[in-house]
Image: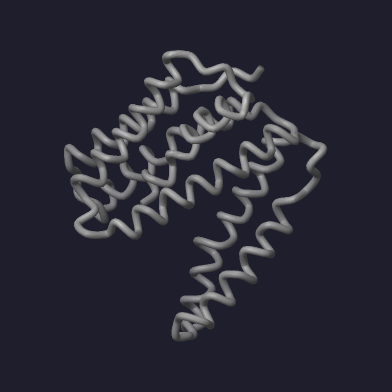
Length: 187
């Protein structure tokens, strides 16, 4: 799912070209094709019936791409919108949870672990990313993000959670390669 969600940099380049934020060249189209082909290679070897999950991962990537395009287009003039967006998302998720799921309260230790491992680092990373998009080199940030899925897959294989497979490695390398090829050029 992470590899599919990490198609967002490629989506930024493609959508940014459509919106006139980037000049698209042949290498950008090659990168777009390579990125989506890499996702297809990964999905073809590992999904085993989880197409809804793959679709949600793609939607996750598309929503982050939309945010990045908003940041690139509006820049510092947009102000601090991430905190408000996170708050709205949290309220919507809580509403959906109560509407369609059974509430199970985790043990305090498990809840602390979830906050310590998932919520806190993710929130800090998103706010650091937002600051970098407003004040830093957004293209360098995007290029560095291309390595994230590959590093994630390698770590999962190293600790024995994911089995090394040709599809997984080839797809990850294709997605990361797509990012490197697709680096946009601002107009």
